[in-house]
Image (cartoon, rainbow, N blue to C red; front, side, top):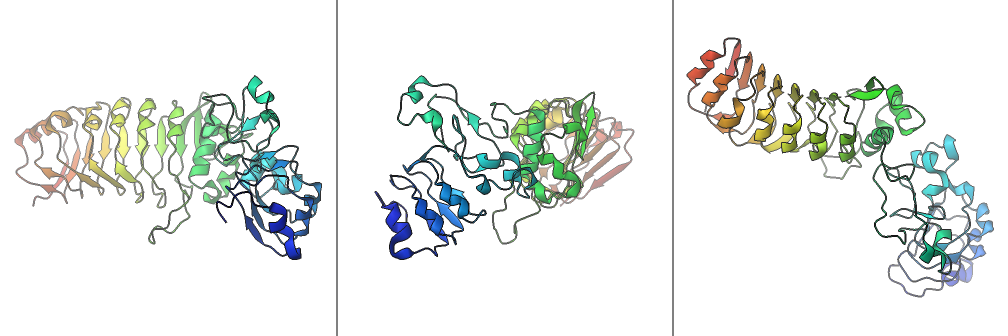
Length: 406
């Protein structure tokens, strides 16, 4: 019933004693007036959506007689007062992460706060609006409204991952966001306190701290993103690695290997994590897209492994500029292009270079002979041709060459 203007709400609900309605959706109309107390007669209601109308007043106290599991969407109206707590999900004992975290804020943002959806979401809480004189002059004053979707003050926005509404994302909130956006409720029992911000980040399963700062993220035991039917093309709930992970700038180790349902790509912001020494995103078949050139900013990186994933396009030349790299494992992806002759010879500390089973072409550059610490090179299953350059004779530590030419 979209775009029905000036609808008589009382008539729709209660004409002819229709009290066995199960679902009502009157969102995005110009409905005015108040919510009638007779709504409580609809004891069978399971869902009601009145989003984005102009309904004012308070929620009738008679609603306390309704189904406590009623799904309410009353955001972006002119409601004032309070929300019956029975609709707020059972508080801290709730099995629902959203209501456990935010309570009634998950139904409607409280007075003098806002959220783009009008209510808190798993990703972010309601944010306080700055004091606004203009807002106080309106009728009713905006500061008293429930479920606002914006503030009067320009430029104030909700920040993804911000739970406490202060406009910033703490280290602990970043880890919680990673949990939420990769469907943490299915990670496994040891991880379930990741949602609880009262638990210190250094006490979380999978986290190792050094001098009180998060230094290692190891989620090889977390069933990340383990929901959704990928083969049928259905869109899973997983949003992948959030860009906010880059705020963990003390991080040295990221291990996400063998996460068979982890979805998404490596965010470009990873270049800000300049303390990283070890990245393992191997055997993650749904992780893909191009590798970000910002990986070249990780001057401390020693180990980079994406074997058995779905990364594609040309490997950025900036990755070959990392003189600290010791192991570069790129096999079994969908990489194309050639080996960059001007860059590949700069990885003077590299010991393992795995490039097999990709769609690269051309020849092995003579500059590969500059990698005098090289012990193992694998480039079979590619479209490389030509001869093995004689410059590899300078690699006196070389123990194995795995190649196959077309």
